[in-house]
Image 1 (cartoon, rainbow, N blue to C red):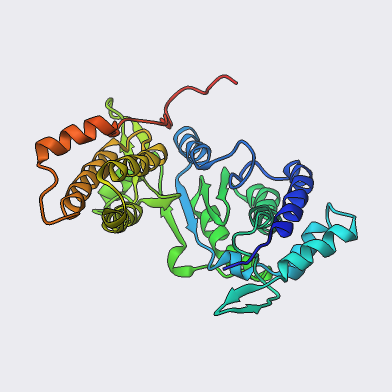
Image 2 (image 1 turned 90 degrees about the vertical axis):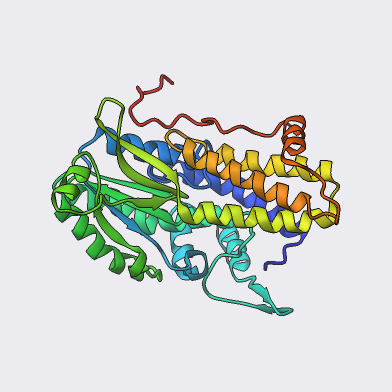
Length: 345
């Protein structure tokens, strides 16, 4: 963990307010993480609409091993000096980068990595990948591709979409060397080039295979169809994220039954379920959200009845309690239909 005192927080906040507008003017539109007026839903919306409305037929999904622990301080300083001329600010950031981490009561300094939990870390990570990845893609990969090419990045998670397979293969082949130049390592087992797009479903069936899917920002993207039978990019909560969410809810309920009253436990459970739905309740994902709500109800019923030897609720009384607390009902919170018309600004 990182030990940050109040003075450090004040200084980091001031530096962030200074650097953010300077680099925001330079950042590529492909970057969505930790930026003003950007979030995961906007990134997901852009991906869906791009694949839906453009000649995209191949997707490269990639993963960087331990990005925040492998950031090179030497390269970071070089990137900062592109737009920051005041060496006093540079020296201050270097001191923060070299502040180290606390392990077993000892502070260990390092020449790489960004301090986890630092206010400045998200901005510094965006600056690093802006030069290491975003500019390389927009100025070289995209321009040298035979067809259309698009990059989408949220913090250290990214994927690239291509019109032609040879462009996607070339990008994947050169990506590892590009990242290694800046001290980053590509996870080969998690980096794949798949056929995905308007004709991917039919082509896979002709080969006797299942259509390929990819996972990004907690959602599994797959090739679906509209009610009229036309191609549509669809998404559902990834099996891994769904399992993790239910596991965390179970751990919380097991602990909360010993420290909270029944009413407080119901109210806090409601807040947790709302938080999940606010993110995952998007277009075409209602079935997975219904499953999540149903399972949390079962988990909550189980652990409420284990607060004491006497059974607290029957299913009938539990339903009344859920109604009393305003238990959320699954519904679409965010319209990310890739087929919808462009919104007027």
